[in-house]
Amino acid sequence: MPKACAHTASIVPVTPSARGCEECLKTGDWWVHLRLCRTCGHVGCCDSSPNRHATAHFHETGHPLIRSAEPGEDWSWCYADELMLVLRPA
Image 1: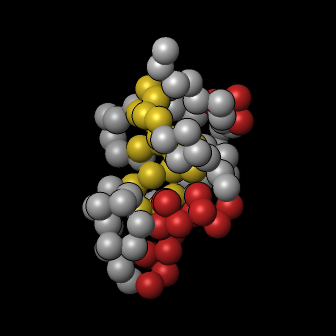
Image 2 (image 1 turned 135 degrees about the vertical axis):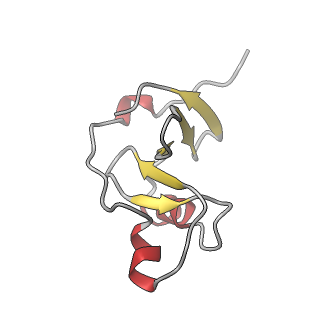
């Protein structure tokens, strides 16, 4: 039986914290893709980016779910359960 995500009930409507990776904007760094925390709205860069701020945000806060902030993408990732999900954007 496939594994299920135990965290989807924690998704709330959020407002993005920035128009790009919050930390990269502060330091003048760059990113490849953006991710949005589905708990607080933090915008961080993906794991293909040099700083991996979205994953760092998970480790700092424990917020388990992100979604792609890229236009046309509707997937989410649960760090805690290590699962990709296709959910409606919040």
